[in-house]
Image 1: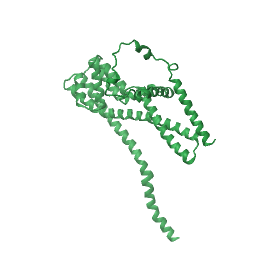
Image 2: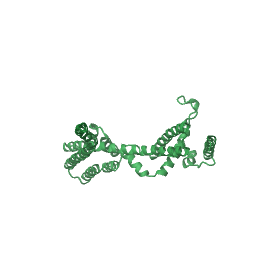
Image 3: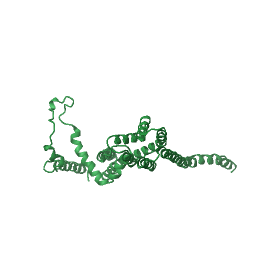
Image 4: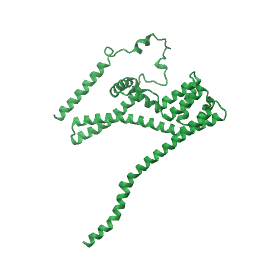
Length: 310
């Protein structure tokens, strides 16, 4: 095909896409949602006139037009990728709002940004070197998937970093709770003192437990919700021991001291494991960088002498 035919095919594709979008957004083709059917029967306060809105003189916003399209694209992406429960769990572990729709929209935007970048690069290659349009289309699709996967990977890394912060704070928080309870304070007072004196992810989670306990939920239920949000086995064991001690009336100080000792032991084991991993990773530059240079310095003088003698 000649360049003129390619341009004609491209313009025809753009025109057909525009016609499909216009037809899909017509009132007859657009499905009526539950909110649109119920909203006329709700008792709402009258809206102010747009002439009185001094802070927003524009009659419309770009987000009002783009948000429905982004929501629909996010829903299609969620339907194609699946794993809604996994995304919600990782959002919860990362300390983010469990809004899967917003995360899918962010994934869509990352994919579109990567696709636009690849399309601009492909257009430059097409103009300069006459690259194939099919190859450019494949490149755009690959970049779109790469943008979506990069956003998903960043979420997993954020959840992992937060879990590492919680595990780093856990021994100190457990020790403070044990000291507070041993000094004669109750469970709620000890948790309140620890949350006021500490800063970090685990202290924030304990503060959320106290807020839930003060708004109607029982303290064991709030602590069990904490273990479900984190999902870390040391935190789960700590919460289970704390809940059993509260429900059965056993001495809480001994339980907390034992839990603090277990937390210290778990932190020590974690440090030993990390040290072993670092030791193995340090062998890579030694084997592939330092050792070849050492062998080269040892062999080069002998090789040069042999060359001179020959």
